[in-house]
Image 1 (cartoon, helix red, strand yellow):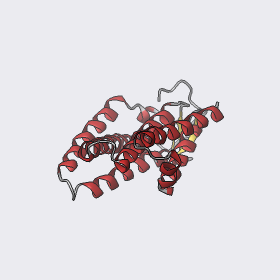
Image 2 (cartoon, one colour; image 1 turned 135 degrees about the vertical axis):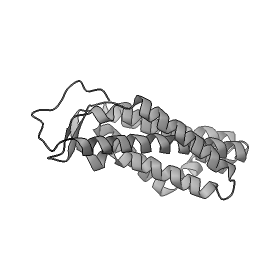
Image 3 (spheres, helix red, strand yellow; image 1 turned 90 degrees about the vertical axis):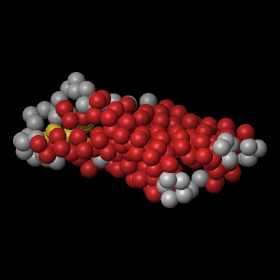
Image 4 (tube, one colour; image 1 turned 45 degrees about the vertical axis):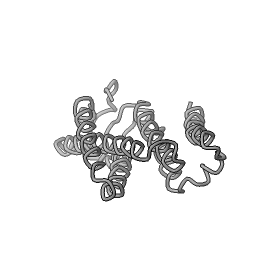
Length: 201
């Protein structure tokens, strides 16, 4: 199963680069070679963390906050680079960040997970949702980045979409991380007798 998901994820990343490259008569290999090294590093980290969370396990709080930190930082950097050039993009980012935060507050149940502060861990129910969620956001960001680089559409429209994805993901994960951290701080320092089962993700 893990090998299959890894293959699908890598194939999806290749497809994102092949489709726009063909549209612009650019070799797919050129798109991949032109992709910054840190993009592959982020992809690998998201894939690894996502796969490890497909099974119920006790996870340190800092590890659960790794993926949110990546998307929050990515969104903040996108905002910092684009806003000075086109101030309207900052409004686009902020509106979608609020919407993303609202969605997180309405749907996330992470604060209900069993938490063992004595050991500094949270019992996270196994789920493919974190992996799929991360790969979908990464795919959208990567596709938009390729489209902007190859000028496949109006730069203004593509930047608005990029800011929308950046803002929504940053807002969603910021609210999610804050909820989880606050719930963790409120829990008493006691040891759990056993791993909880059937907890919703």
